[in-house]
Length: 160
Image 1: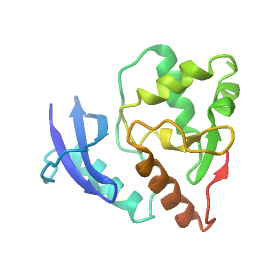
Image 2: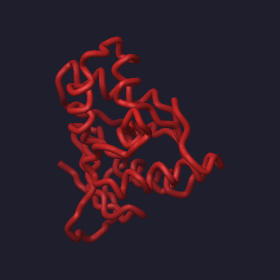
Image 3: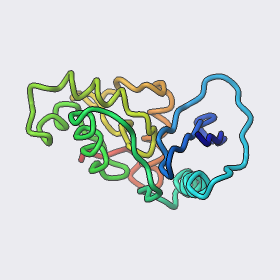
Image 4: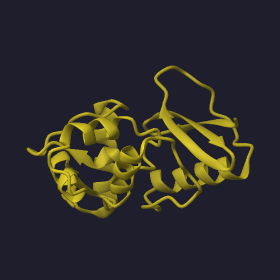
């Protein structure tokens, strides 16, 4: 399974590929040496992440997928519909999914997202506007939301 390490403004990202698809983008808390991607798909992912962090890209279109249950796939698909620079609450996400009683299950599925930044679970916040629940740590979630707000020129993120 090809792997590359990418040095981003929010730390080292470990990017894995399997069968021509990026299958995970994980934040690394321990040191890892950034390296050159050695497959076309990893190269495309790194280029698009460069563009994202430069404020030039709002969506990713390299091939990616992650394994999960049908419910998890639905949750992650919903996340892909949250516009760049926008946020929604877990309650709003549950309503969008027409499953308002599944807030905890949806939050749990968000936490199992293996494609950080690409599948934008960082755009889901608490109903009161607070930053809650992010596997990559809260400072990264805050940084990503502030980055997108700056690029959009809004000064702060806006609701979906």
